[in-house]
Length: 324
Image (cartoon, rainbow, N blue to C red; front, side, top):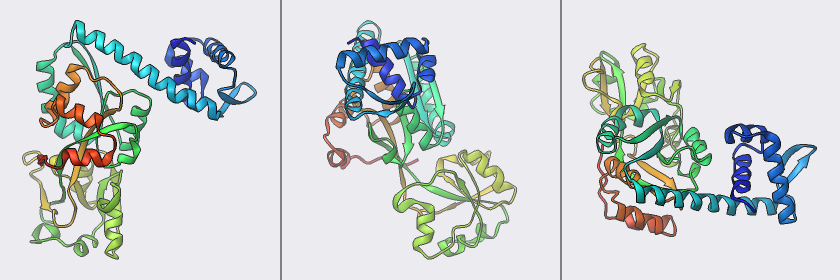
């Protein structure tokens, strides 16, 4: 059994059992991948896949057990490489971050600027998308660190660490009827079409669930993944905007009126996550500290060792998260 065979196996699984796609991403040939998989099956003495002709249909139960262990082996092999790199030079390498448009546009610029000053030789890659897209990138091991809000169920293999709290704000053009309201109610808000994010937060903070629980209609005029796009269509009169508080720029958005909605919407917690079992290089810890100062290397190590979610909650119980 060779490490290359396990790497080919993992690539096939991560590309929906499509050998051609896996071979292209591995920069090798499709026959070469098929041959190595067959050799691995011959050595193991059982099939890893159920087949329909030459096509792979699904994993066999035994094959799935092999894949689970292969992924852990490959992760540890990568950790050994990271140890070697850290021992030689901790200030060189690459860092891939998966995050939402709001984080990338309004929160990360200052963080990344400071990070670049401290680690100028680290190649930085920023991937933006919805929670579902970021989850897919983490599943394919395309990002080292994911940053998101809510949707924890999409990231079962990650250690999720709370970074900061934030609130939603209502935004309307100047002269809009809501701009004169001293305290906007959910009933008043329900009279207007809403322009907000494409993704919905799960649980009690979900906008549709909030209106539904109050027996009110939730009228959506437009959804978008980018707060700047939402504000553009609010300016065009398509509806009342609901965006993250940090997405409102007092100067650039001077033509809009932000309305406090803390009494309507529960606060959110933005988290930072990485794959459990991954060895974090020094500059990765440095990025996390820059993003959330309370995430010291020691604290992160304790979080990694926490056996379950309850233990993580206990660990963070005494931490006062900053609010943006």
